[in-house]
Length: 315
Ligand code: NAP
Image (cartoon, rainbow, N blue to C red; front, side):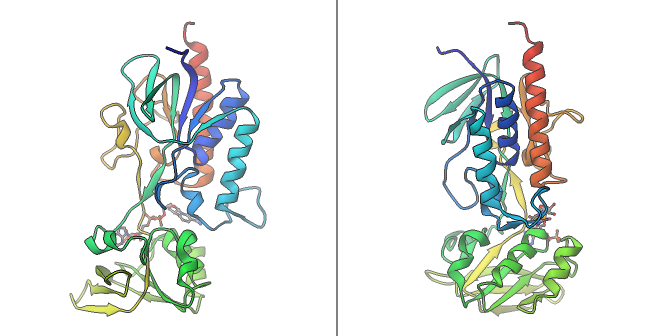
């Protein structure tokens, strides 16, 4: 068997790639298993690949497009010698040292593992939503907004993601209707102000989506007023679901301690998990802040934790 790697990083969003920059600059020759393009909500580079303008990442006065930011992160890690594997991990074995990671039917062993697998978009769980995904239903305005030029579009959700998507979609849509299950938005004040000031956005409060209509593409939505129970039809040909995220932690069930909602548990302010030599950073262990900059910060912490942990191990 080949020598174990010093550090393997699973995931390539802001957390994984920042960990890669730091680990590479510490001469730990990290391997980043970056995933592979499989669906709009799950691909190398993480959620910023599905974002438009990022205005709150420090250092970019005029903002930067999410994919451009992630390409820069990746190039920076590569410049210091990080290697990349464009595959998904199918299995991990954290029962002993070195740790084992199975990718493409091959086993990779690593003394330290940094888990940075992030989170993915939630959907409403409707049968017709699933059936029409990619045919009018989307979780990514950046990816699919262009296809709805001149159409009537709906966005579901009341958080920052929903408002960001709604604002972005007004560039394309004839109208954008934001459907929210309550009367108050969860989104930040600045995003709310922007959405309220946008004449192309209509709000449908206290409403849930009961069904997605359409044979081969979306033709409309069935909405229910949560107060009266009345249903109505909204004629739209596109619906963007922006109702939050779940952490990508299925792979680690049975190995790493998780909260009830699936987020990984790290110890105190560190990135240590319950398994020696396995560290977690970014959205996979953070359901509070979930920002690119906080993910990047915790990626840095994970690389430093891993480096110090490796130094303390007997050779
Ligand atoms: P979020 O803040 O959790 O909001 C999810 C929204 O979807 C809530 O309004 C929620 O309704 C609604 N929702 C959840 N489940 C639903 C269901 N089954 N049916 C209908 N509606 C449902 O998620 P997010 O908007 O993705 O944001 C996540 C984090 O990323 C936040 O911290 C946010 O600030 C941040 N973020 C920031 C930016 C930015 O600053 N530019 C952009 C995007 C995201 P309730 O309100 O009733 O719970």
